[in-house]
Image 1 (cartoon, one colour):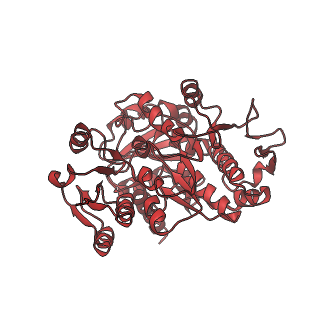
Image 2 (cartoon, rainbow, N blue to C red):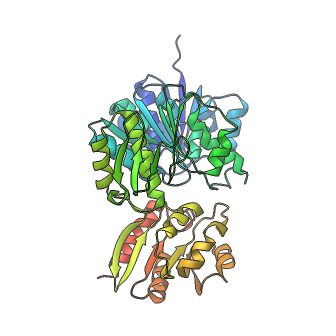
Image 3 (cartoon, rainbow, N blue to C red):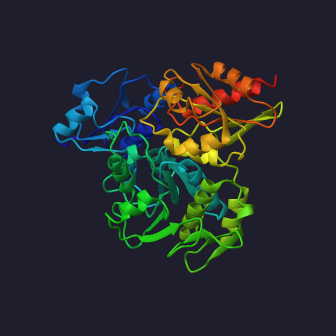
Length: 452
């Protein structure tokens, strides 16, 4: 008697539910297990699809008998259940790996410590402006597996975290980007930077001479790793200024040059919709990928000029009594905060909100910018001791708060006309909020209520 292959999905978020639907459509015996409480919308979707599931805990007997497990990226490899599965030789893969088995669509895959979401959304925006049937997936948008199953597209622009890349083996990116690599998630990687770097570089696995690898030419971590690993893919580096083999750069006239496919594109840097050096790099990477997919130069230029940005990334919220309030809640690591501070005025007119769940942060990277641009720091979190100790002597004033309301009140006290209040926390959100989105939305709501 034929027995269906049993697929168990661990984690019932967007990616898990999408993987369950794809597995069901492909004829597998599917079971989903979540240790927490399922979102009611996800639970109702599973019920409507007739997919067996549990939540509020894992039943090992229903999991250890799996032929293959699709794991949520948030579950670390050190989790006891994962170790038990690995010990018995059960294959453990990611949703992206699973979805990739069932589509021939072109994959534009983006990773990096910072700028992933902006570059993913910008790339998709350019592709659509060029008439390409493109959709975002991975860390943003809808589950790739769900789209492959029910909403197929010609091109997927996939944002990939290091967590997702850990369990990707045979998946192949047609275009891969590494925007930058700076310390992040050190608690996940045993405080060994090389472990994190190795995870990021899994994005170029399986690439062939028909594929392209886009990367920041001046990132010392990337260039050093490229001396250790080989790829058959075509190399397309970008940099602020032209260097050897640079495929995207700014010339002496301050024009952005994207030189690929034997058809260079040129547009004034001043016309870019997104400001700041980090967004220049994001625009270069997105523009290069669009040219490789076949978008015309004029469509790329137009899309780079009219893109509206993404929520929670240097997002203007309001100007109240002459004070600008900016939501950069997506800055969940130190380097991302560096880019935000780099875009602030040179004078000491910034009130900076830091804090949350520390991931092994080294704040020394932002210290020069804090010293030159920040007039006060408001620490917002349940454990602010590290921030208070590190910055205590570096700014004119620093205060500790344990709620958003208290942080907003302190920012009002510390700011005057002409100042900027910048929420760029350097930390994960999980001490006071459910996600960086939750943190950003509550921040915007609280700020806007000041106007009422």
